[in-house]
Image (cartoon, rainbow, N blue to C red; front, side, top):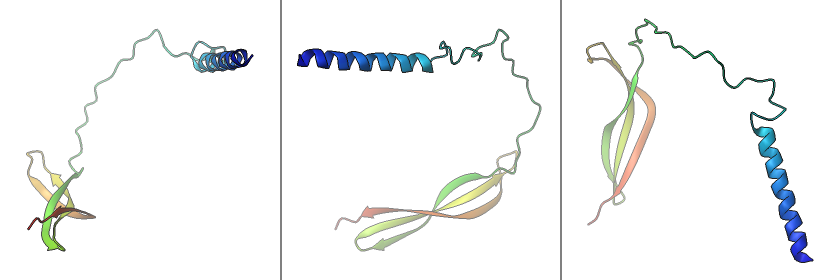
Length: 107
């Protein structure tokens, strides 16, 4: 009797999972009014726009190295670099973000 109870519980769960999978699929009657594909192919049009040169590139640079409590602590500062078309640095602005890395100093 206990085996029959486990079997009916398993069968009920399988039916519920199958029903939820069907209702979530694009073939169910709920989604019948929506089109998931079209007969017309999507065509990308080229755009003649130059990328902006005033977009900063974020880089972390080593700011300082300190020795504290048996550790070496490297402190990195984040900078915004602005480049021109030739790749030369126009402007370098520090941000407020800093990161530190700690290394154990073995005696």
